[in-house]
Image (cartoon, rainbow, N blue to C red; front, side, top):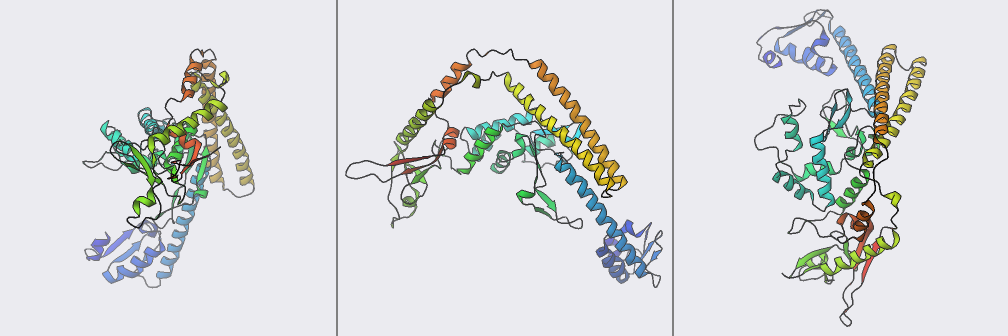
Length: 449
């Protein structure tokens, strides 16, 4: 319509009211008082008695414009307040849920695991714990024919997903990295990471982390907290994969004792070595010495020390061994405590709501809307608590522990030391220069405990 007006294809714009054309005062001045007269277009708003052909009518149109914009600003603020309240309560208010989850059919503000996608998320974390980098994980998923999150949602016809193009649907390191660093997979609801600058702008900016809305225990976790933390420690090492596609056991942890540079891997065709990266990158004018050490010997040395500490200081207690069936029971117990805590918060929120209404902070309409929302949420939590308690009653404590102790002892022998355990226990390994007279070389391990 604006383009047709610019081309002078008509002479009159007729509206029910000025607000039907725009509530933005800036656009009122730009078009109604600026461009329309230049283009020879007459603007009429019937309900407001606004007519650009009537002299002395401009002030009334400007007043209407201000009132309309104030209404828009108040409406935006009220909507933002309701959304912020839902975020503080841990209610999900997004469109498409996070990959691995789906919206609860019984409650649009609650998310539940999507079995198929959740299994892929677990696989991604397992591969990361096994030492695979983000690019390696993306390659393996593409080899398996697993659709990436965008194509997965499009295949299910989710309207919140943009149309797919040919050739899309492959995983990449960025997508894998986002999944590996998203704390929501541990059952923590995190919202408000980004926000619009204002109701008049479509510009979205990132918000500081201390302003995020973070509520724990709002939904079922896909990834255990300990596994998530272990993955974060591994990602912080920022290692590069070798020819095998996986970093070696000590990648990112070995440093030169003299200059502090990370030791880089090299090979003579038969043996793999680590040497000072500053020495390798400084060309003819060497800024440090080689500090070379055989990788297999260093790995064996470190592995022996880890086995010694684990077997010396960790005594296996039968009470520490939980039957596999109890994993479900433990999850139910955690959920029961979480739901009970949320019920307590809802009850307190209802009391606060009544106080705000009595103090005149909330209008009658706002109070009715928020009160109904709280009551619905409280009812949902009560139903869920009853379901969890019923499931706990059915679980029972009759599982047997036969064979689990021996299996745990086998794990503690650490015939193969996993990389994630190395990352948890060791802060850094410093390699000194080999003494030419004695052939001795100092290796210093800094532990995290």
